[in-house]
Image (cartoon, rainbow, N blue to C red):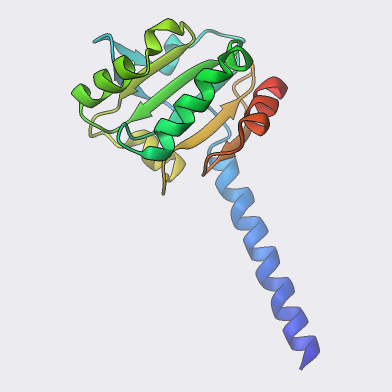
Length: 163
């Protein structure tokens, strides 16, 4: 009986590991997107500066965790000055403009906020279950790490530094 239980545990652990590897390989590259930004322009991944790391944050303007993430990031924005930050939501445009205004995000030239409106391309690409969802890519556009829940700021800053 112990052998069967051990074997069953081993099979389940292996399956979970392979499922996780499979999902990470799906998001290995920066996704294709088209967002309407808070400054009324459309931007795509082609607008990203080549050779610079990228942090994509899928968020919701009315999500308390997303709002707290912004408060925390703003306090340490110097740690995020060398990465392009793209915040994407599926919320209505007026909510994006309000979020951008309320957090004073125009002060950060490396940060873009926009809505994918109802295309749901990014939410489906990452299979987002909860917001905020964060994916960090290195200067070559390869995934460094993805977070499906908010990490501690020290950990996020350390991951950005590696990118």
